Amino acid sequence: MRYFIISQPKAGTYLCANLLKEFGLPFSNIHISTGKYVIYNPEEVAKGSKKGESINANFDESVKTCKDGHFTVGHISHDRKTVQTLKGWKKIVLVRDLEERQESFKRWQEEAHRKWSESAQARYTKQIPKYVMDWTKEPDIFLLDFKDMIEINTRRLDELQLYLFDDIKHESKQCMQRAIDADSLTKSSKRK
Image (cartoon, rainbow, N blue to C red):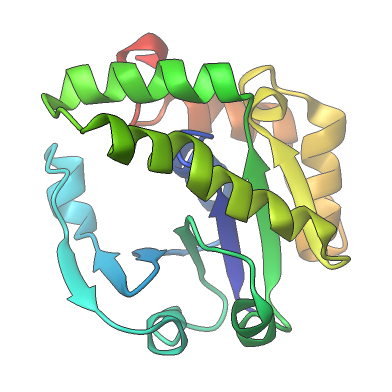
């Protein structure tokens, strides 16, 4: 079994990744996007590096980089090909309120000392998230809201474990708190 966090940008992608690691799932350290994937070196990330190795590849090639029993992350569109390619995977679709995503994006730009054009910002905060929302129509996904993580909704986090493992193997409240406290690639100063 392989696992994919399909997320809206700035919806807690790496917070959810921290949670899955707390649940005992190994992270592939790969972020998949349309036409490429980025591999992050965990040792370099631990030292504060936010840079990864970007590799141009189609979606089919990209998902092959995720080993069995591992999970990967990405902001991927919903279409016949991606649905077919991810058949048999456990998929967590991660969403967040538009205003909160825009605020988080602005804060991330400031902290990362990046300035994106208005059109790039709109694509990142509005267009891509719409593609991700199309995944919610699929019957074999688990829909998770950013608030479920940040507010530590143990009922919903237990349901996530049931989806992933057919069992509640871990104390969701403790795992989520450790995930929140842990560092990640895009963690905001608001949560530090």
